[in-house]
Length: 252
Image (cartoon, rainbow, N blue to C red; front, side):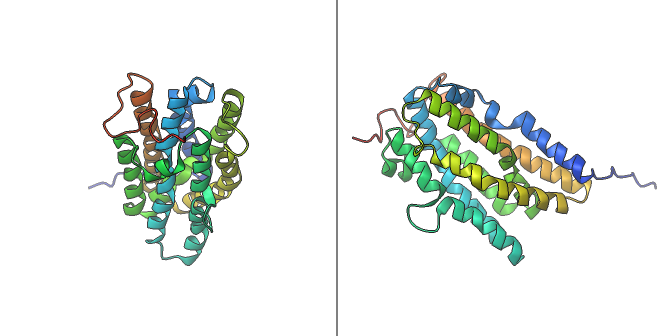
């Protein structure tokens, strides 16, 4: 009986290049909805639908991070990771990324109380985002961390979004776009730590494959949310029962 030789693991430099190529190929900056949004082609109702549904994703980010931390025995890793929760929840009422997202909601004419009620969320949005939370909660720590590495590709989409919104939409002020501006400051520290942690712990080919699959999965979670938005609010325009309807939840 002969043992089949195992393919050696990639070097850290090679593996990082593999991860970054996943973003180059699969990140949702290439989705037609984002292209339409950033170029000024979305109607206000399409912008509002995006704000309503993306809110659900924003609120679940600290929940998935809390679920991850509940499984971490290393206090140093918990100490570093918990800043992600603070970034989104803030350290006081009215602070943090979720509160900043509600400022965007108000700017586009939505009642923040309506948005935060989550009553208008599409089923596909819930399914995709909840699948991500379960993934981070249930998978081994390495793929759970690797799934967060879409943050490597986020700064450019935030810069494109700020520029596109400011150029094409009257609602886009410095205050309205504060969520994206703040993420440009917050995300780099998370990327630096998360990427290095994955590179340090993905020591075998099996580890690297698992991490790469996790990153692909996360890009699919993001892409699926935009597919649902396009189907419901762009073409063919079939809004699921119970999902946000234009004129719902608007400010007086």
